[in-house]
Image (cartoon, rainbow, N blue to C red):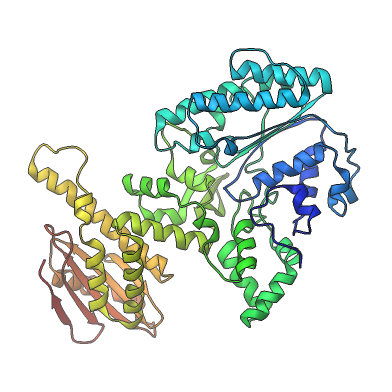
Length: 549
């Protein structure tokens, strides 16, 4: 079997040293065959952007023999004429700010000038870059410009707007000569890639002829692995792992699709792709895990969701319009835009409403959903991973076994000390309003944590379920039990349980073959934790439990 190119981003090394290469040169040819082209593409981390840039480099260096056996070599009339290449990899600069970024760009410009034996003019990076391209063009001909991870100097400082904006201004200045250089015929091919698109408008505003491929039909499967590619290029690995796991190939493929497929950047939902990094790691390890997610925990995003008190239930079914994909503002970041750009959300379905399209966003697959929700549980509960892990496992067992005392005890552990972290940022005008603000904030936390835990466990949960006589707080559906839950803040568990019965919430579920459990939970306004709870199996005697605040 061919080797797995985990972490290898050099195209020439991959195809020359017997690594698996998923041939994308057919899609690439569609982008390069025009006399001149200028492109922008955003994709999440670890999706092969750097490998794509490396492939462009080999093509424009005229390394024809390297492409033997691939579509570009075998099926096209590409002329393989070499061109001068200016390549900038912003990830290689590390975490730089202001003058450090300018110095890094200056070094890159000087190295390229030395490579092509030309001089550069000007006191700033803008003029030096402009003169570099012009002088190489006059000496060597039309220039190819490849830019990888253009947005890293901004993403590194998303939690500090002034610093992020400082780097944005430098990048805008650096890229500003491109439009003039293109109009003079100096540029043969321009390709700029990064994770985010939020800063594209402000950085490349002068380059209005830059073709954005981020949601283009020309690039839906340019990166990532399609189902057909998975089964073709990794057939030997699939067969070997299926045999090792003692399951059928069909069963393994079904699990792979659930865990790692589901990414879509296609407004028509014609192409779904697998995360390439996770697929390679799976075939290397032979077991399912959160490979991609573990390489970059989204601390900033998770904390932003908590701080902005975003309804976590909306993350899995956020509906947006076309304008959502084109409006990105560094100063007032839209958390859902960032989640989409960074790969934690993707397009799950498309609806046509009154001659306009609406797009439903959601987690792309099991890997992302499971890991992201777990991080949200940690953030919302302010608990360390070891505590969260133990609580989650015990809650899972308690719901499957109808062991409600354990369920309630684990909730108490999660909610302990949360109120300490939820003090209002500004002092209220009086103690009463201060207490109410704290209480309102805690109420939202409570519902969010319940939802997150049960969703993480892949147990079906519906919150705020509308019925003809009212709205049930939560319905939780396990293999043998169906729980109808009502939560009361600063009221009794008896009142919560009676409301379930008075509103006849159970009527809709009477045909189920599962045991229906009614659960009322009361929370104390002072301790911010479970005070009393009461459960009752439908058509059975109720049992009352209580604990001190």
